[in-house]
Image (cartoon, rainbow, N blue to C red):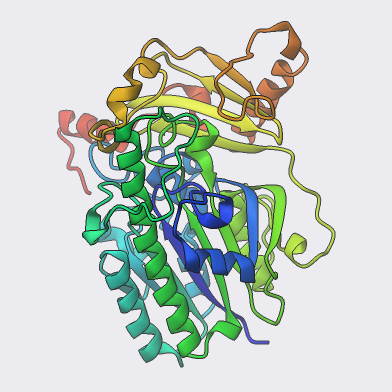
Length: 434
């Protein structure tokens, strides 16, 4: 078989809020069908609970702090991917793939987009219209193979009405346990469900176009999201609600998966090494922070990882924290005091946030440790208690070792943002090049 095409679909702020993940009130038939045809990962996690750092790790196989994206790539901090050649699009372009991006990318400034390796860029639009751009591309470029096609749907990013999406309540509305029962909560989740339905419609158009072009038999399809739901105590936190991600995969050569579900811990940094191995290319351990799970998909020997790691340094402010998660436990290390969880403006302006203000008061403890089997929504901090005296030091050691091995700049003090450095340059009378 020739090297497969790659269709890499992402969306924003969705976590695992899909029908195929047991959310029975969510209308997502096309993604549910993809899960039924391929494989679904029950324990997939991003490496950062906000857009730019998460996507930097997703598309490089390296943690965000190691590729220069410790916060958002737009104002005020202006982080950007370093080096841009580390992006997966550039890697496959150098292998002879035609590369195309439809939607936003969020790992560098738009002016620097060509450095990431894309041959073609389609403008960001609502999911059904963006999907029609992709359909046209597949119709006109079906002979230009192999291709790497990246489709980034904005939905379900807030506002949930973006692009004409309407609230979805046909199957009712179910609230996660960390969200208070209230009519305003129901209304916001109905809006979220409508945005997911609209995104799923776009996915359906893209997958149908792939089939119509006769390309589905030689195209590896991957779907994931950047991080958890845009809700209080989710996005921008290192609780599971902030770092859990859907991950669906269907691959060609008559071995699509058949609806299997894998329970192994998977991190976003594992995806690039996996795709490279699927293309028959080595993914060396010293180049990536993740490792390939392609042997798992092939039914070959695979030793499941015992830990995944997550980080946050900057979002709307400097908020350094790191986390290590095992199958059962989560340890979060908070390097600065502050509100118990950060609330980005889009969430703050919603209807649920006022219902949860009391949970945001006070200060973060230095260490949080949760038993995810007994306390899946991380409400009872066990740090410092006798029952975890054997566990807490070993998890702290694991976190420290990861930070050292990945050259986490936080070990040397507060990392200086590009905004800070450009301001210092101006103070010194130096010319600042954007």
